[in-house]
Image (cartoon, rainbow, N blue to C red):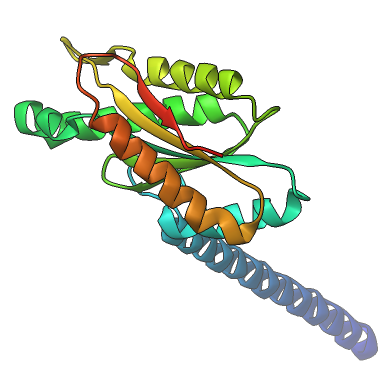
Length: 211
């Protein structure tokens, strides 16, 4: 006949194992729930600060991130860039909004490629902005970089059997501190609209703000 103490000890040990297993299961469930909530929070934060179509930072995020970059730039000049597509409405009117969205995604990808690690954003509609580090404020270098950007924008975009082409008007203005950001963007915006008003059929239209 089994010893009652041995039986009781065995039952107690089994009970401890079961309790430990149940606690472990609860801990794992709690960890999984916390991870799920953290992922949802991260997704909500990303959605609040990024354009849902292109994945670029949105207007609000651009100003916040740009101010941080300028604070950390230690007085080094950066270029505020504003880019707007020419006659973009015709794409939507002629080919539909899906085609327009396809063009905007391609433009965003090209702008991000051009900018590299620099900040770029979609401000809304077909307007984009950037804050680009420049190795020099030499006007010839800036003109060359701007022409290269416009040429990238004007490259053909494939849409099924269609080949679309858009051009961009670009304005630039130097900015060296957070307090100058809004003013620099306004000047770049003015130059962009002045470039857009130029007559002719040039594939690359761009102007640089005086500085």
